[in-house]
Image (cartoon, rainbow, N blue to C red; front, side, top):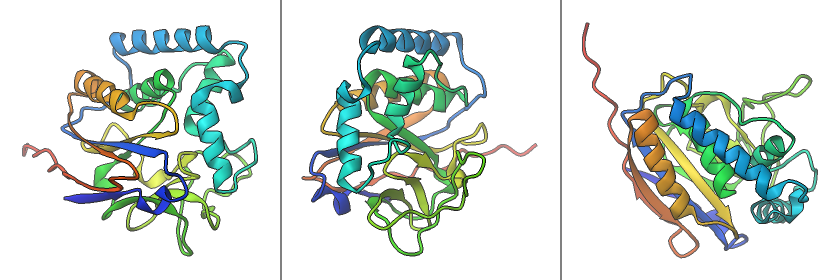
Length: 246
């Protein structure tokens, strides 16, 4: 069993809620099925229909995360939550990124729920997981570093991070992911997070996520919910699929 904790941040952010989905027996493909393509197109169209012409700051899911970011000292507009970046991209006429079917489907759920979602390869994670404040010695390798940016840029003091026992998995709560645990077509086990901070229902989004994973990636999943009243839970770390000798 592995432990996931949000207790370190709950005193300052009592509305933080987390759904954690651990899944196994995944078949991850670089492309999308026709059904996933249709669902993503519908999600993008619905986002544009609902929010076109609306200031980003007036979208409840965006506003909730902006307030949370200010709560740990983030004021720059260049540092925005993952869901805000997806919504902004779609409203500007772009499409959700094409990465692989697991990443693409959780981005679809993020867009429709206005919640922040993320995923990591469970076989690349070490020890227990926690949303906590950054510590001296934390390391981070930015998977999305742009030209001129240092990918080895450690978290700043007081920053909320998502981490395992070895290094930071995501900086600024849900801003950018570490390159060492990304989900790829070689991933067979993954751990996904659905995050809210004063807006949105993580339970409903997580159930949609689990259904889509089963349909698109063939995986089997388990779910735990955390909040300020239950800030620590154990979740099953499923065994890796047995590989046949050839």
